Amino acid sequence: MRKFMMGIILAGAFVSAHAFDISSSNIENGKALGNAQVFNGFGCSGANVSPQVSWSDVPAGTKSFAITMYDPDAPTGSGWWHWTVVNIPKEVRSLAAGAGQAGGAALPKGAVMGRTDFGAAAFGGACPPPGDKPHRYQLTVWALNTDHLDLNHEASGALVGYMLRAHALGQASLTGYYGR
Image 1: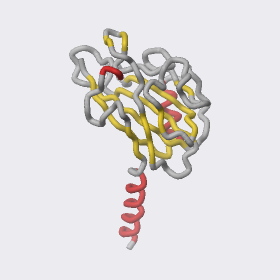
Image 2: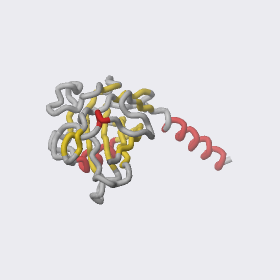
Image 3: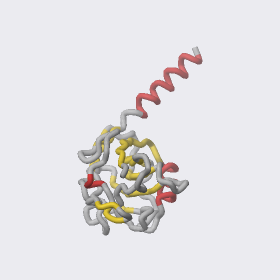
Image 4: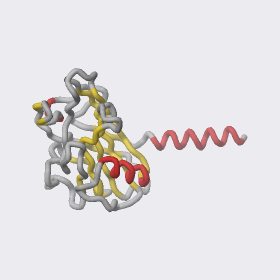
């Protein structure tokens, strides 16, 4: 009986963990990124526009959201942070393409972008080294158990990632690829 009950509890947790959903009109899961999401610099010549992103079926108790875009394949030993946004109000369910522009004028009130590995508090698109296999670009929406993280535009991706993991109720991701 105990094993059966644990199975029911675990199955219930598995079902609820997968309800949180993410979508983007600019990034198709498992497909190549378009030129719009490619960096303009470091030898790349893309439009450097943050993707549109929407989310739904959020975990109960969510008090705010965060968004990250991360390349785990960057040859740094620690990956590459392309975008971090925290303190997105719990009522918000999408960001428009271009919301990651420097200055954050297109972000919801109270939202804050952290510093990417390009060194700026703004979206920085894909730009892997020439000749590398295509890199993965993981766009993730985080549901958080707090309405505010005490982070500012100088917060590194590592610090943002640490804080998100400490406060995550759930996350939903999709992955685009890009190589050159």
